[in-house]
Length: 259
Length: 207
Image 1 (cartoon, rainbow over the protein chains, first blue to last red):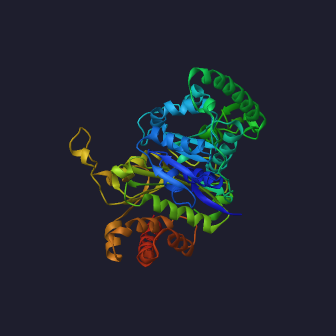
Image 2: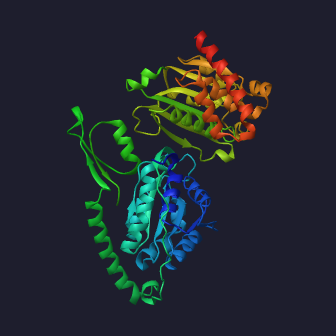
Image 3: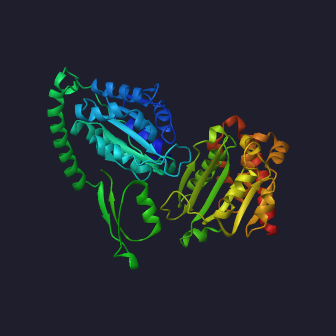
């Protein structure tokens, strides 16, 4: 078994590379920086530092509209900078898979604010995966590309510094060859004038409903029974909070991997 | 701690702390690789290094055991603190369990802001650490490293001092060091590790 001790960010990069990502663009910011610096080391990936997070988002979105799998990564404040294309792109959808990593910094070891980035998912309708450890960083990054193409929208992988800068063992896989898709010419899909946007919003609500069904039935959502005196205590958690809950008490945990 | 400690469900919680550029992240990688090369144990790490490139503090959590859930250590549960910088050691002291071990480098790095604001640098950091319940080993890592070869390997001197407290063979440590330093620097790192390990062993014998 090919296992490595990996930073959460390194595991995200590895999972994205295995998923066939060809374009990675970011503006550096703690705790997201290592994702694109690491992706730059892999073969078959164009990686760049863009002028800011909005530019990075548009580089990745452009690549995805053009038919290849693309990724952008940013810290919390960067998601605010990129908010315009971030929200619009959920309406238009993509062609090649597009994955957005947003890494927050509860505790502010290097960040500017302690903000709950999950609201970017709520504002935009973008589905969000929340890994808890490095293995899930790898697996969820890989899965995010599949979901992005299946449901025709960008998918966010939300990290916090507790997941991005932890190191734990990751079982890695091989890169899959993903051919560039035919982008075609779809004015009604990519032109957000009201007469196109209204049907796109309706379509987005249908895509979200499909994703909700998927998330509830998939292994992303699981219940772990509690033991001993805590068997009757239940905790609902996701991401890094799942690890903290598991460390703190042997109660039952509903772990939500997607939101 | 002995290997039995782990077999009985014990977890060793180690914090490596210092200032950006001192080699804290590499030291943590050496410790983690030693555990993996030893085999049969889990190791998880967590790093806080946000402002490290601007001379800020870098803290690396390392947890070793047969079962490890969280990658970071709860405050007050640190078993070993390996401080590359004296004030960073003092900062961590309240997080160490009573009777825990602190291995502290004598180096003091005064941040530029400490002289211009209301905060001041604790030049008595090591004395204050000794006032508590900790077993403190003071290591002049820079002088030992300079005597061995170069002050740059001070971090590995400190890793050597810590190694005396953990149940892993010297050869395993050396293999882990080889994985984490450039080949052309291996010899001086091996010498630095040996010098640090003998300091750690001596203090441990005395304690």
